[in-house]
Length: 167
Image (cartoon, rainbow, N blue to C red; front, side):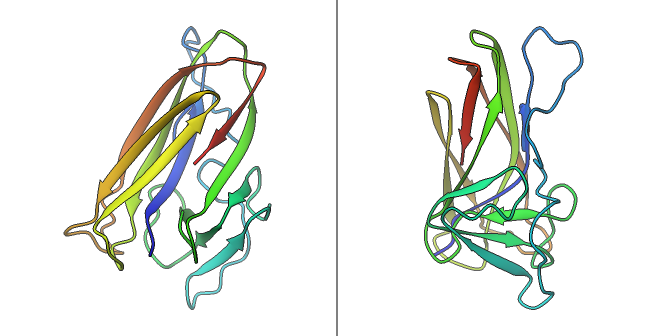
């Protein structure tokens, strides 16, 4: 069963981008937030499955289960890459980001769902430092050609000089 699909992470944060609340110009603190730099993906099937502890996606580590690094299987929200957060089982990815303790940040990312499989309602939990939030996406009426990507955001205050972002 496949669940949420992730793309364009910025920790200014968005897709994922992060920035301090007092910065006038946003700077994405996330490495490879649009998943452009990853393993080579064969055109058939259009994805590569990565297992726990894999670091084939620059800046990211698979933190649990498996994830599918998507190439041509469906249209990405940004650039050419995206992730199916449930490869052969529920998976996760993480990245540790330099932050300033006490500063506010905003994480933004694009969320969709794999419309090929049930259930129609997909779920994704995001943890950034000590902040945790669940997101959902309904794939009803969506397809590989029209994923229906939706922007999501989460604000948090850094508790340390390094913050782990995990989907």
